[in-house]
Image (cartoon, rainbow, N blue to C red; front, side):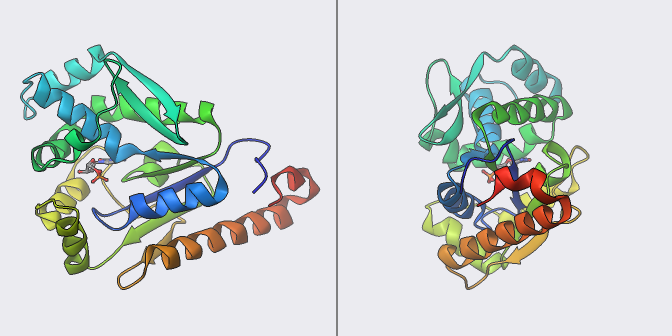
Length: 231
Ligand code: DC
């Protein structure tokens, strides 16, 4: 795809282990857009709270740490990342301990406001494929390209176990959906993709076809002004 005249955002939301990361990466690669894993941003803050021994159940302490947090948003290898003290944590943010801590951190309204600002700032890197829980509802509600991924609980649990992580996905989904601040929900206008039994190639091909269909519909609606966005 030729670079669009102004950056566009593909929002991919969904439940835990619904294939958001795998598919968002495939779609970003196919379109040559920057990939943004917003779950990794929340995980990075949760990891940092544990590292600094901040009580993750103390919302004020978590918000204070976030406010004082010296971190830098960078783009490397086609992915936006948070640099913490000159370092991008990877395996540390995927541990069972961090996975258990992250919903508490993600429920703090001041943390979510910080994340929203930082995630919107990713536009400086160009067009984005951004995955998370509130991208289509809260971070980029204005985008025309919204997807909501889901799969059966059994299949999602199998995927997590294959990744070497044991966690109660139903409980995490419940917490993500019930929290007061930007809960997980299906964005208005989103294409719902239940990918149980599908390969990532099948799911990402479906998403790409839908993006192209929506772009064509947008061009038909808005006319030649949008030719710069031609595929
Ligand atoms: O996608 P993930 O499992 O890496 O997400 C980690 C946690 O962060 C999950 O409990 C939900 C939360 N999260 C969120 O609240 N909003 C986002 N945009 C992304 C993740």
